[in-house]
Length: 143
Ligand code: AMP
Image (cartoon, rainbow, N blue to C red; front, side, top):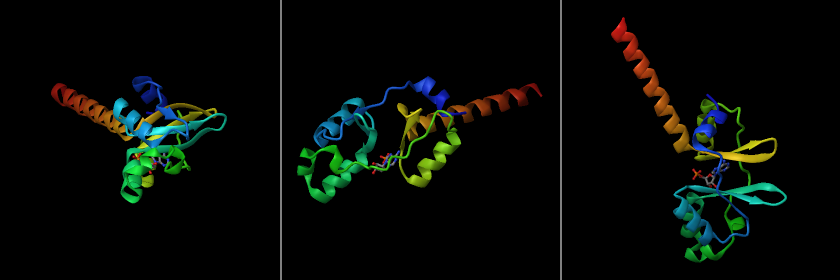
């Protein structure tokens, strides 16, 4: 199972914002869309960072709530780890576990084509396990 299949189910929409977007507007977007991270995207460079709810909490704890009036570029993670449509779900789980983050933008031929969150991975994993259990039950009941 790979990312292309996951994207077919969840869609390819990605929440993005420019690096000069104020953190208070990033927070508003996260709350409104009920998501945990926004990909920071500047023309013509493309993906230049990512801001997750964790970055906002850290910034407020360290610098006070005034930090919310600063732009995303102040707190974003610049070295964004990405995956491709051919990445497998097992690979995503390993990358997220090792990197200790929960979001992976999907890049194909240099373009941002989707994002996978840990929630998407877990949802898929549960569905797969349920299918296996059901197949096993069928096998045992017909055996
Ligand atoms: P998260 O667990 O996704 O909320 O993010 C935890 C930390 O990792 C935050 O500092 C994020 O900016 C950062 N982060 C999230 N996703 C990625 C990613 N794909 N590549 C690099 N850093 C990331």
